[in-house]
Amino acid sequence: MGNGDLERGTATKSRNQSYPQTYYAAGGGRVYDMEYSDSQWTSWLVPMIVVANVAMFVVIMFVNNCPKNHDGLQGDCVVKFLGRLSFQPLRENPLFGPSSSTLEKLGALEWNKIVHQNQAWRLITCIWLHAGVIHLLANMLSLVFIGIRLEQQFGFIRVGLVYLLSGIGGSILSSLFIQRSISVGASGALFGLLGAMLSELLTNWTIYTNKAAALFTLVIIIAINLAVGILPHVDNFAHIGGFLSGFLLGFILLIRPQFGWLEQRNRPAETRLKSKYTVYQYVFWIIATILLIVGFTVGLVMLFKGENGNDKCSWCHYLSCVPTSRWSCNN
Image (tube, rainbow, N blue to C red; front, side, top):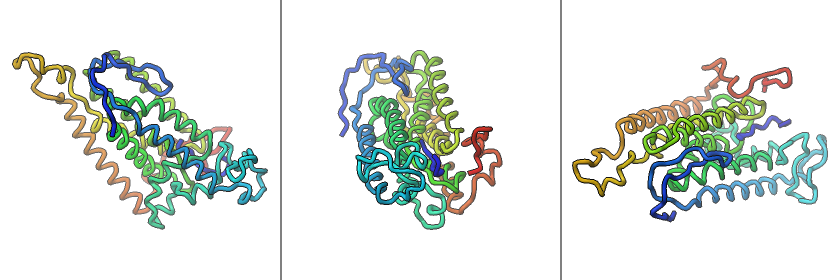
């Protein structure tokens, strides 16, 4: 964006589900089948998150009030018939959205206000703000494709925790490395869901067929989305922080009993499994829990001490923007 904003980019169960069940990734394509008979939750949290984000965007545009507040130096408001809901001039915001000052006022991620003005709540509020209609549509479509299937499989509590904590993890890492611009968007939380999908596949390896194809597909999807983050004005640190948080949370929250555990009630006692989970599932759970706690603790301590992550890692800025002959990454 021309102004320097950053994109971040009671459930009911139906029993006796037939299997194998099909798992879907972003874009709606089939990823892998489950050799597992489990309860199916009704997805309501993800649709509610979508509604909340759309409602919040309407509020943002109402507060923005382009006809009254823009200075006219970069052109006229776009889609004027919407009145105070019309968008900023495209030279200022090509995503059909508000001004950066409006986003800042309503809770965008801004390092200075978090560290020096005790506004830590911005780590959460920025997740619910979007820079424009294009930004909002891209994130909400991704959320529907990824989140609904996850919620059906694991329920609203676990998926909600992954979404929120991943969004916060993305905000923390973004604040440590990007300190001269504001950042908004649910992309960190969405990458957390992708990360959780990957770790869920790894920790529940025994209950899936087509494992290699599933792993390859997820890795390609994640790599492509992270690669987009090296473009200017895209906050890839939020993506990376959200992905890492979700990846660890998947090992902790999305663990399933090993294959055959639920069906063994009909087996003779001497043939039943002794443990609900495998040894490697316990190992993953312990390691992920330790890393998640340490990561959040170190990140928050560094943030509120006012440290700049670029001072600790001189090359990390390339993870969010790679300069070319067509654009600069100075800001």
